[in-house]
Image 1: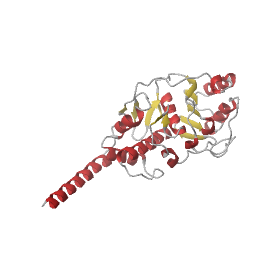
Image 2: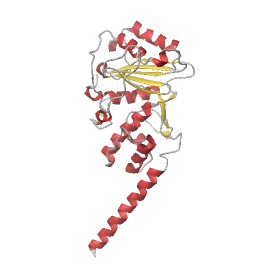
Image 3: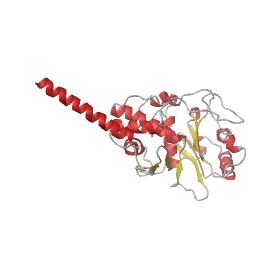
Image 4: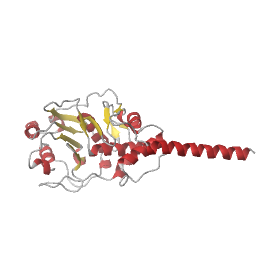
Length: 284
């Protein structure tokens, strides 16, 4: 008798779990425009260009170049310190920018957290559709994806509230740089492990920039979606975020020009060659 009761309870639990999974997996993760709550959105650590080994006039030339090409935002970060942050037009530090491919990077980071925290099966992140992946996180965690993202990643980064666009998202430029820091430092942000160590290496490297001055394999990697471009130079522990405003002929199709200018502004050139994102030790 006890066996039958136990079996009935187990079957009922399995059915309820299946119904819950179908509920989350078949509905949109959240309404378009849902808020992704964050922390207090405080400023990222700052440093003077010289303190991070930049030639300041050379870096200012990069800023002028970006302004001439209609950039809405340009941020440069090294060792977790912002050394350049400028905006133009109606954009400012609180403007939310569409992250393009960066939104998928955030989704993949959240997947690593979900696998670690909710026994979610490891998905094939190279093939799965973004909406399906967000739905799988919701099914495994029992909460809509934007809420899961807020609770387990966005607040841990102390990022300001962002917007969920199903499947994209909008966030401040400085908060996209927080994501860049996590990618560069094997899931750590300011010394705290917010994404399981080793997870980023499983995702594969982003693509290399295309343009007139190609980089060596692994030297510079990029995310490009819509107007937002992020370059990562792992050996230099460097991230560059550019938000295009009014593309000029030439620059829009040469993805190597701006990162080359920034790297040349370094007084001491980093070693070149291949590097996985998880090979770096966090900066000071």
